[in-house]
Image (cartoon, rainbow, N blue to C red):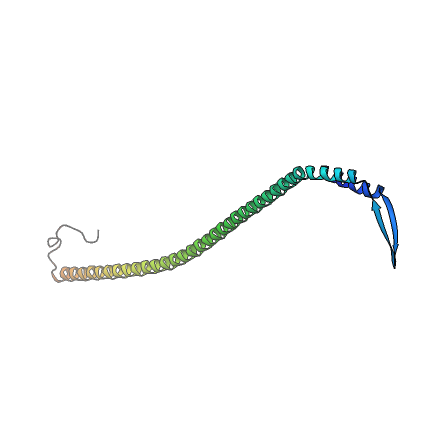
Length: 172
């Protein structure tokens, strides 16, 4: 950079200058004498180089600030996206958990309902079997009664034989 070179030249001018020492009580004071023309020439170069260097430095600073600002904005966007993704995952996990819980509730209720239906079906089937058994018992009793009646009719009328029958053999 131009400014740094000019500053080095000024420093070298000061070191190359003639040193004068004066004794003032209580200490020693030193002064350096430099070529004024050279000094002012270097200052003029410094001033003319300063705007270009300052413009460049200022532009670099603005670019740096813009880059930092953009980086912060990008970081904020990434963090927000990550938060949204995390919230979505948490929400999905919660939905899955609720769905699983609801499924367990439905399965539990289905088991209870199935047991009730099975018990009701068994009760109905027992009732049907009991009614059928009762009905069959009454039919068997009627058949026995009818047989006894037929046997007693046949034994009370000895000469009749097969004429009193309708042609259907009950034993068949």
